[in-house]
Length: 528
Image 1: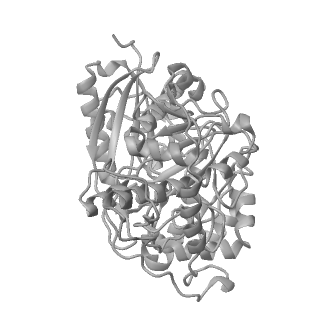
Image 2 (image 1 turned 120 degrees about the vertical axis):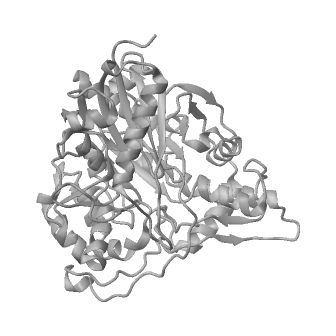
Image 3 (image 1 turned 135 degrees about the vertical axis):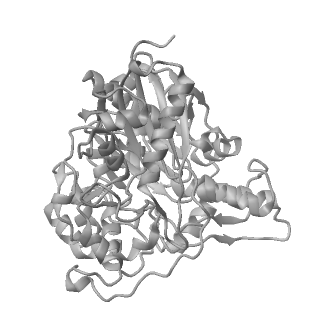
């Protein structure tokens, strides 16, 4: 039987919302309610209606409450973890003025390049924010809005991230946290506050932004009566500040100051990410130097093309996703949605090395290899950002935690194992983002450290898979093609398009043309 204390962790991702009803004492997952929402847009556009997120949250909570069988009175707290970087603009009544621009909307690539130049280049940005603007970052999206829909920017009474929008609907209080705020490129990880110079470059008034809570587990308010009636939960329960999805996944794994530090994680979802929780402030142009939800740091590299792109290649070949073989001489870079790491927002898929004897199974295997190498090559950079030497045997022997939908796929696991040469640990717990949000809710309700709570729950535990000898030949073949494509040997910023005309950027940043449209892209899947 569950304890008398239950918390709800909400994972509002790219295409669906999940509400995890969790025993606040043991961490046992009692039920997960689910509800879909839509992504629209062609070419580089990716948008969603924030009101649909709110409806999905209510539907997911209602479904989870029914499935769990617990009385609503047992629920003591709720927290939201949301897809990062999205731009939500609201009117004075808190209603969206237009659909949200999502993390994987690449139309803002020229604005990202213009912002980078305006501050003096990548090093100047990492010194302040830990990250260099790319199309994903919210500051670039706000610039795009200013330049392309100035009427919407001028009418904005508030600017929010996706998780901020939902948290405000729950508590009636505007708030964000350091983790999600650090993905905007207007929040400084060096000072732990909004940066007035960066806001000036973006052309954004700080008054439009929510206050930043100390951590994602900070209680920023209580569930309002209106929200309680909509969700079927008790009014007055704790509402946590919440955080971004990657930060919540780290909490769910027990990564942070009160748990594991400097242990790498590879998440295989629509996007592929590699990250670690650390006390060392990251300062590498090759990474997103995020803050963590608990006050530490979360250096992270993200690729746009991972499981969805490989599944698309499998569909084109008429193969099951596990009907794959090592790629042989073929190299396939499955950049069907452009790419973020390396920074190639206008890229498309690239296939080379075909022979008469190349089989469809090898082509699918090459897609796996291209996606895996792209994200794995950033692993060493993440470790360096933690102050570690990747070549140190003690560091190299640390298991790579494999999470996300791909972690349940045999071919994904074997491809990562073969190309990384590392031991893998596949956590038994699923729904790590929602579980991390549940730990934040438990922290808000109890006043305890959320990472310590999650570590006690043991969600990050699992079976360890021993390493294989690294497939150096395949690694060299794929990275050679990738380096020729980017013109650089690093996993970071390469192949930037020229910035577009800015509406209030410095004159040196204007009139430089725009990036080519990446063309039609397949629909998005869930982002781990």
